[in-house]
Length: 319
Length: 274
Image (cartoon, rainbow over all chains, first blue to last red; front, side, top):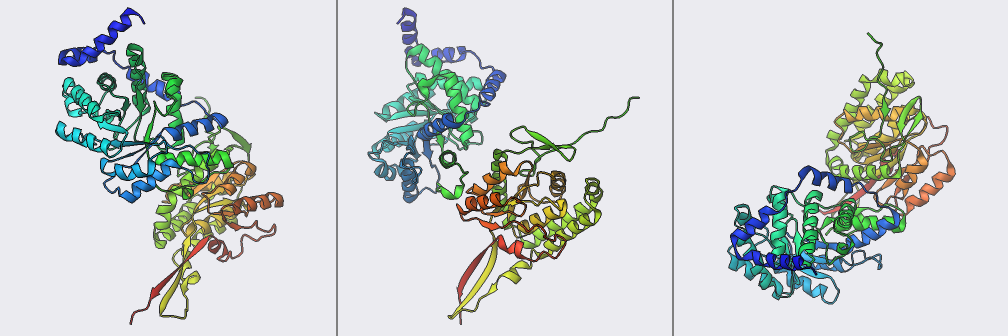
């Protein structure tokens, strides 16, 4: 390791100490070329992935799905059924891999934990007053602790967009640090809610802020606002995790969530991951899809490849 | 002033109420025109569009469906010359218009003729009602180009099904022109989808598709292909209409069999109170 890299590292860890240092650093990040990012994302979306490559991509995408249900109407029975589906997505085909994780509200965690124990499927829970994050810090932290105690090994937190957009970066930073310590051994995914951040520059700043504060994953969206994950936003985030690893040596995962409904969409993301950050991230430990209806489309396409005839939604469970 | 150059028309597909080119980008020359040559992916997209349209179309009232079919007849009447110019005999266009009207009338009557109260040994009302089967794949007959096409589409959709039609490869212009009539007739997008091109590319895909509920093989002339398609259709127990005999008279009274074959019967038991 070179001397400059070492000093860069120590510089970055110092940033969280003062509001001014954070602001200077985040506003010193290069601006995002909006037209360029959108063109690049659109261009990567035109790749044609067929036959055996497609089969591999589908299996990888299934392993990367965070099968999600975040509804007021969730019941223990419904989340148990979802967890069972996560373990064995296609009951007709034992060679179908299990998904990456199940993602539920904290009160549903115990029911899911029973089903997932020993299966290798992770259990994620949203916390910190999801989806708005508009609650006192103590309550958010209690939310996290409760989810971890109930058995969640991944926590999806929302950043304080109110503070971020008002320019109080230190407050956002401190909240992420506090949440990370409340997580204990659980992985922390930081939801930036890019649909509310308005610009790509803000997305880049929020990505760096989340990574500096110790997030293990950065996630695009809650899925609860009209604009969810898009390809250009994910491109900006992937570039951020790539640059962050180059600067610090620490690898951070990325999770686009919301609005990814078809196999075609999912494969576009995989192409973008491979082209932007490389094969190191093509693994469920480093890249996830937050989705619910995506899984059925992946299963239908998988069935098409194995049986040769197009399948239909009648042959897969609704949730 | 230079001489005006006529605008040549490209005949495209009709999927989900829109007129896209083939996903494959291919076309072929037939009847002195460029016509899209659909691929199996176009067939897949058409089934997706047809499936999406089922809920709204099957859920519309029978009266409303009848009105829309009548509207198709009105629009067709206004385009009579266009079909005559394509080589369709004038009496065939008339018969096609009348057929739309004939089937439009059936929309709110078929349930009375084909459903009804069943006598049962117990204190129950027992009622059978016909319901649409869902997405129907249709292979249109080659001749008569317009009347044959109308005679297979109208009976399928009047009851609330949505259709994916494989137009006759040799006579596709009438089909695409009919699509232009349908697109301007208040018919919701996706209720009728029309694919042009080789039957060998699209029809086996439709016959094997697990999200297609019935298949009408009327226009399949090759007996071997028809048998193969029936085998594929059996995979998910599709309802099947067999190929029409060569000497079938399309101008004769069609009867209700085309409609009833593409229906499911729902029977309800209701306790009789005192």
